[in-house]
Length: 487
Picture 1 (tube, helix red, strand yellow):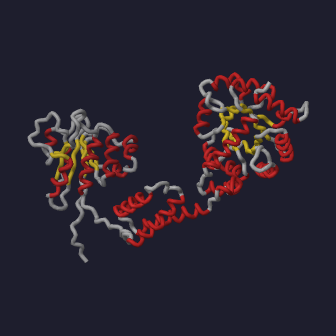
Picture 2 (tube, rainbow, N blue to C red; picture 1 turned 180 degrees about the vertical axis):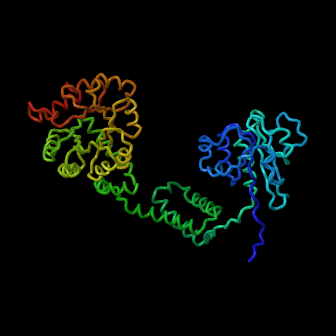
Picture 3 (cartoon, rainbow, N blue to C red; picture 1 turned 90 degrees about the horizontal axis):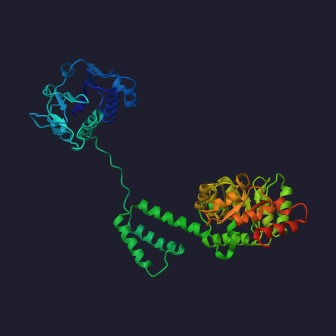
């Protein structure tokens, strides 16, 4: 069968006359490839095609490989029936007015099929001469601002080629089959489903709810919802109901929320604000009464258990089990089970440096999380679970960053290595509103100096708190007395 459709017109060739910079040749090749042109003719170029041209051509190197070099314009234009000249038209007494690049497709449309066309561009500095323009018709220019009325060579090629590209006939686009519009019964079903869900999440707070529902119905009518879109909204409602059904009642208390903390985090569900605030307030109140965080850091689970129990017995209300303790999570669960419900003491986990460790701490039931640095991933998990958050920092920038991440208390350490109380006092100057915990390996007898410098809490290893020269109860009472500033 003979195809009677007319052959597609041959794309025009780009002819560059006396090009001075090889980079412009490469950039022109790229512009041509962008607009579906492939035939490049170079008339007496000043520079050969080199590394710079190929670099600027990017993936249009084939155009450079196949470019024809002609010694003069007459030989370059010999095979073409239509020659289009380009000019900036500035400061010239031209006998005819150039057309704008946007008018060129219409000017070429009257040419017979198969007409070979060349688009000629002159040197960068001067453009085509009057004699060279005499070979061309029509003349084309790109209107520009008077402030800078000329384009770079490759830019001019791109603009003219773009106008030809967008004017080419296109293959008819196959329209996708549209989803059917939703039947009124489907929309009625959605608006029967939506109000109970909105009431359950607390949206229906006043007498305007019915008016809002009417507004939403009008919005749905204007939007001309499809069956698929209605199904999506119904799916959102069902998913919301499923999650709401899994929420424990307020009366079930903190223990139920703790037991399900990992599940809630993995489903991006936050601890209820009231419970989160209660946990944070309780830990903060405990720190005010007992400003020492007893840190348990050993390589023996048995030793860690013994130290933690001794701290709890001696009235230390905040105990931190670090992840350096073997099977630290299991020890935290054990300690939580050994105390009276609801604390004190409050049991936290330290050396929490990653999201995975934070999730493990939440799963273990930890009530505060202590990180040695301002780790954003740790902060996100801790705040989502409603835990008291302590983030480590040393410099003023790090301290501010920790507070921005939601730290309830900033652990400033290692203080002894950078000047101890004197450094803390200097840092506290502009940051007096930031609650700071001093840490880093100082003795109990140094607590008053750090307290005077502005620390409101003190992170101390269990052996330092419990002491060696007197009973552990006397040592702990002595440390707490100094931490509270009591005489």
